[in-house]
Amino acid sequence: MKKLNFAILCAGNIAGTMAKTVSQMNEVTPYAIAAREFDRAKNLAGQYGFQKAYGSYEQLVNDENVDLVYIASPHSHHYEHVKLCLEHGKHVLCEKPFTVNQKQAEELFAIAKEKKLFLTEAMWTCFLPFADKLREILRSGIIGEPVTLTASFGMDLRHVERVVNPELAGGVLLDMGIYPLTFASMFFGSDIEQIQSACVKSNRGVDAQDSVTLIFNNRRMAVLNFSFLCDYQNQAVIYGDKGRIVLDDFYMDQSIQVYIKGEKEPRIFSVPFDYTGYEYEVRAAAKAIERGELGCEEIPHEETLRLLGMMDQLRAEWGIHYPFE
View 1: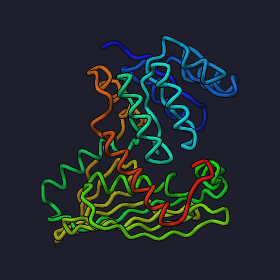
View 2 (view 1 turned 60 degrees about the vertical axis):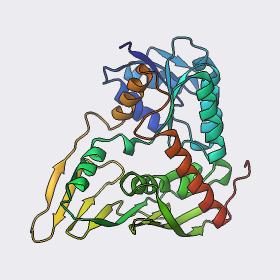
View 3 (view 1 turned 90 degrees about the vertical axis):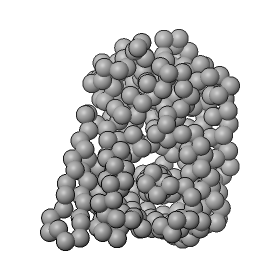
């Protein structure tokens, strides 16, 4: 398998984590980093052994040696940056949420399909080791029939401009709510009968805290809460009639706690990362590209579109529209 030349578009915090990850991997070559300010790209590239640094995204996509680009920019710019990469023949791994709305994603997937390029959403939760282990535990019947799932995700991000600014597609739903929604989809599926929700808006008109309840056709229920006003416990619990499963950091967990009726202590399943956790999405992307596939089975294009459509629906119900939409 030819090692892909891996590039990172944007040089913010999440880009630094990905650069650190890729520098430790054997599956890809840390090749290039681009930022709007050359010094930021140069410093990050030098820190983690990337061969090239660019002071513009256009320079990056015009480098014929770049194979796979990781989009690390704010989600308000994902559509623009993914399209730029696809139009220059690059495979793309794009941070979550994939785009601001479903319409943008449909256009990007259509371009990728036409050009036979790989494109997928880098929702790392879908790729982490705990996901397969949790499915295995659920299939075993150890907690009986799963009936209820709860997940909360909250951090005080009132100081983060991309989260609070409507011009940057702000709001907790797109920035953080995508995690509980994805988690519920991963383990309870997509056969939803009813959605009930509520939101509290900020003084700038974006959703500051939300509650979403999903009722599934198999009578299961997921109760999800997210907020950028304060810190939550960030825990998920799946309840069955014989016990429950607890994940203390559900979106990036490395330990699964299983509480069974009649047992005093939980059974602990350790599912550690190799490096930072970002390595799994990169490996999946590299394997998919080697096989000539246009996406990853861990999060198919259809799933990305479905979740974006759900968030579009929620925002419409709440009366939240971004100025550029």
